[in-house]
Amino acid sequence: MSNPTPLQQKDLISDLLYKSALRACRNQLLIFAKIVKTSLIEDGMPAVEAAENVKKGFDGYKDLSTFENEFKQNVDKVLVAYLQPNYRGRDPLGRLLVEYAFVRCSSKGIIYPQDSEQDMAACEQFIRGVLPRPIMQYFLISIRGTVDGVDNFKFLPMLFGFDDPAMDERRKVIAEVIEENKKSPVPGKTLTHWKGVYDDERSKRLMLPFMRQVMERMASLGGQRFTNILENIQRKDEAMNDEPRLKRQITGDDLDQIASALARGIKRLEEELGEASLV
Image (cartoon, rainbow, N blue to C red; front, side, top):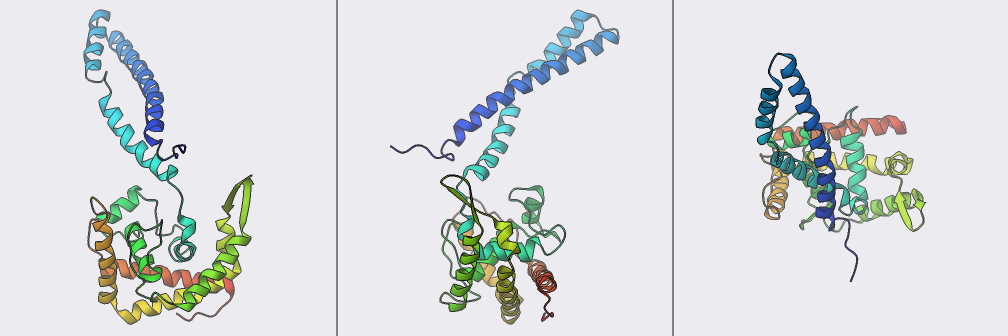
């Protein structure tokens, strides 16, 4: 019988963390109660009466059920994010595109962590400067199709087609760059130094014309047709989830934000590589 994975041990880890945090929370409440009691006595309330009032106030908090619910909901999200297997290395083309177009496009970038306040707000309504992660995923799928272990459904690449020799060549070059940027911090474990991959001139020279092609194909499709593609991908995604991750419609503002980020990313790569602008 195989040992349980870290993700399968999530509930045990969550329970251990909860018990440790609960002790600290109870100690903090006792300190708070002592401060309140002392303050009441200093204000002239008899000691017995002050103690009784503090005790009454504690009756509603002694089980700490609110703390338990809030703690477990938030810790579960964090544990899943950190313990689940990391499959991002299976989509190096997507990672490079996100890095150059959506992360390095400005000082802050337009991508925020999943379940962050900014990302969740942008899933509710359009927010300039924040591209919701679901839309980012749909955009990547429209270009390279779905990737096993990254996307939980199947969809063909619509912008470049399924059988694209140029796409295969891009993946081959990226694989070579990644192989040269691997390191082994501990015996038996290999990690990719992604910053080295992003900063490698071969990656930049590969992605610059590719990003130009993406913009050209988006423009040739037109806003409505490209929106339809993203909406079809969204429906596939929603069919695999209990509730929609994106809680609004995809709009022209979203497409403009993607195109603007691509244009800025292209300009930055051109400047870094010393190439003339073609956008």
